[in-house]
Image (cartoon, rainbow, N blue to C red; front, side, top):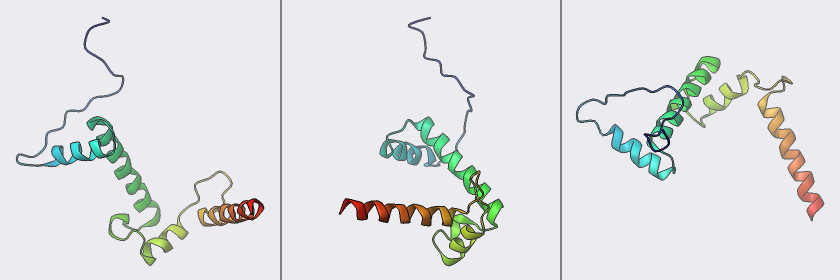
Length: 108
């Protein structure tokens, strides 16, 4: 049907919020601020939460309670590399910073 209800591909999930909860309103505000639909905001936040779980599992450090602390930074240094070359993230970032400095020098 061309003029029928819009159908989207993908699984659907009905969520019930606790009585008196303002979670839906807070999600709606965040969705508007981030220029996303309510559904996209929920999916984005779930994906982020699952990524945090992976980071906690890989590093043993709870990212929600220490982002940017010395302990967090040390945990990130111990983290398994996530690229095919096996080069740690800190080394890849340092190499990129050196390349940026070289490019900036050429522009002067």
